[in-house]
Image (cartoon, rainbow over all chains, first blue to last red; front, side):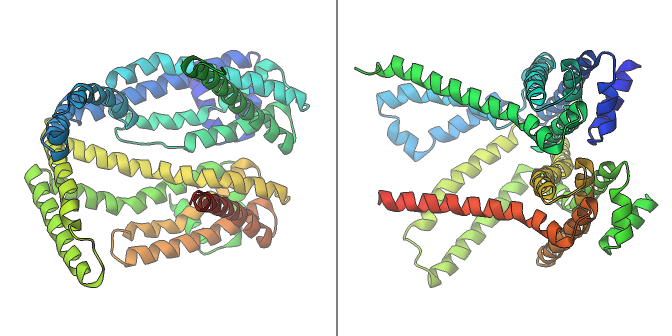
Amino acid sequence: MQVQALIKLGWEALFLHPAPFINLREDPNPALRGLTLVVLIAVLVALGGLVGTALEWATTPSMSDVQQVVLEQIQAMDWYKELENEPEFRQQFPQWYELGWRVFPPLFGAPDVVNAATRIILLPLGLTLVWFLYGLVSHLCARLLGGQAGLGQTLGCTALALAPQLLNLATFFPYLVVGSAVGTWTLLGRYVALKTCHRMTWGRALAATLLPYLAFILTVSFFGCLGIAILSLFFVGGPQ
Amino acid sequence: MRELLQFARDVLLFKHEAYIEHATRDDVLKRGLTLLVLVTLVAGSLSLIVNLVNDLRLSSVEARRQEMEQALREFTRTLQTMQRYFDVPPGFERDVLRYVQPSMKIAFRIAELPTPLPKPVGAVLSNLGLFLSSPFNRISGWIGYVIWVLLIAKLLGGRATISQTLGATALYSLPHVLDILSPVNCLGGLLGLVATVWGIAIYVKALAVANEFSIVRSVVATVVPALIAAILVGLGLLTILVLSLVNL
């Protein structure tokens, strides 16, 4: 019954009306309800995705067969026959070809049922982590900007802001692509969540919504640059 | 449903009361989205039927091969016609065919590979998947733009909430029901243009009503994001051009 009520609350939050956010803010245990909602949405989306992926797999030829067909056709091409005489090419081509088939098909959406099944565990974990980190950082930003809510309330409301993830449920239908709507919609949901939860003006709520994104970009850039610097020390040997 | 159709008619005819009634509803976004999804599905229905019939008709690899060979023959004929008027490099046709034919061979051999479920099931599911993705594509484009319009509208003193702005601007999709005729040559494109212009006019009107400000401000809020994007793209292209000239 409580699960049904939570899903209903999530569905109402999808339409960005302040009422469900106020409802969760006034709840005695908003963070726990928020966590339950996030895990529930993630499990449902992952299960839907598994059904869709299984149907795509059942209507697609086996990837190993496709790999073999492409290899045979490449080997029949003139350029391949010309290069085949070079020992280095003969040795390296199969390795690169094999590597390419491991990397590219998943990137281009080749159905992978095992991967879809593991998402039943990984998606709730990932979404919970994203929710918690965003909730924590946005709470700090909102409080610095004059917000009035407690951490639990912020976590509860930002969990509701993840309601647009429900759109991903549609991927139970094979070959259906939801696109970038979820990300933008979630951003709008987070704005409504922080504005309602902390009773802020629109400008402050906007700043509190965007600052965690900025912090994330800066952190990733910093660690990216640090990583490149460390790698260059190893490979180039650093300043002589 | 009847009420929804009546409302859609009033919006298309720019009846002011219909816009006010819509913007002040509690379920403004739900109703706007329902219309957007319905219109997009109706608009895509004819394309779905055409694509489905085509795919099922050409379910045998041999039929597809014959169609592709026909297309290649037509390409060769077009190229020969072009040679009379343009300076096509010698051996161009041979080079193109040298690359296209092996790719076609690969595609046909993959199409011949067995699948766990019968091939027509795959054709139906992939076409339906594409069809059902269309509302999400429209939502992605619309929501990605409206976020900037919302910001400009707020800066211009707009009073609408997020759900009001989204629910109101979603009405722009209504004239796009004309896109149902997009597979028809010439007429489809013309009607698409009419739907776009009509949709922009509805967008401006709905935004003005939801924010309780003038049409002029609404036009500014609607156009400025596109202008900024165009300027940024222009600056990007100019930078690339300058850099390439410097390197020369």
